[in-house]
Length: 455
Image (cartoon, rainbow, N blue to C red):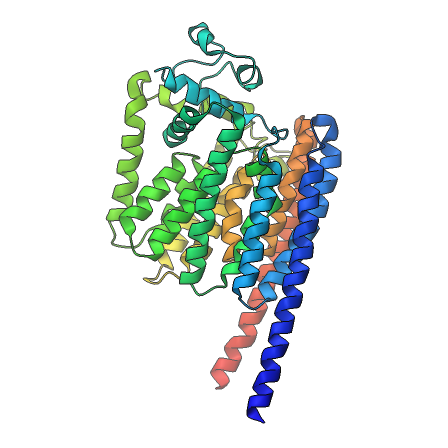
């Protein structure tokens, strides 16, 4: 009788797994159809139509997330997740980017370096680089009046990539290869922390990562790869490797530097030392333009994006619109932002344990705090939050990353007031969901504590 009961239970589990896999295949096929359909979009006029596809893709993605989180681990489920992740990216890989033209600057910077020119020295429109111009890459470069803004590791990757081919497609292939490294590292980490590896779906199927990396080829995928390697190295207690990987992430995109407190282990000197040395060594080849020169177009970019005026920052813009009759200076808000990040960092360090259990959640907390306070104007700036969803499937963060597509409406409405309204649609529901999640968690804790005391 016991064997018969065990056999029935095994058969039931197998049947449920088969049904889940079948439904996952259906959802994957539907998402693939959406990505192929999105190739019809070519310009600003198509952005509203594109956002309708984003809504469909988001619903399918959320359904897939719910299914995977409730499904028992199996090799077949993981295989389905990975196969469709590859198909999604292949569907967009060879199409020209239409959501962003940043990738043309990547190719240009690689070409400039191959010619023996420091990319921080001249703007593309400078007469000194006239001999490098063509009719495919140069006309599509944005900010051609400014030197590059990208940090040294990104520049080194552009150089290596363009030595293979000075094409947009090959640059996108490089980005996808780094994304493959990120997926591998996250899979390893999921296994090490005891979570089902098919949770990689929360990253690999996320519409934001698919469209921004396979579609537009944004360098954020490279930063995510190094972040994932830093997390994996930290879990394996390779502190120096963790510091080096985190430095490389920050040398691709500056944001990951805020993860230092979450990855730092008390009384460890290897990680911060490796981080600092990597930063210094990476900038050395470019220092002929001076310490100020290697900053590139960053100050000008900050001014264009409204960081000096304060319109970049949603929280500050919201405070200024309150009917209280006062205007908070931008400098005061920046000091406030630094103070908040410092408090979060100290809170993380104070709660730190020798184990790895809180590091991933702490990374998401400080990364999300930084991103919300910064309130970027572009959707791809939110992609670095997505890998952490595999470990902490936060509903507020899922909403925030999916709703970031609304920022593409700034193509149509670039004035401060419409941009603020777009961010209201993103951040107000995020804050409400976050408040509800914290209240629900606190309610659960208040129920558990008396039960423990009673026992």
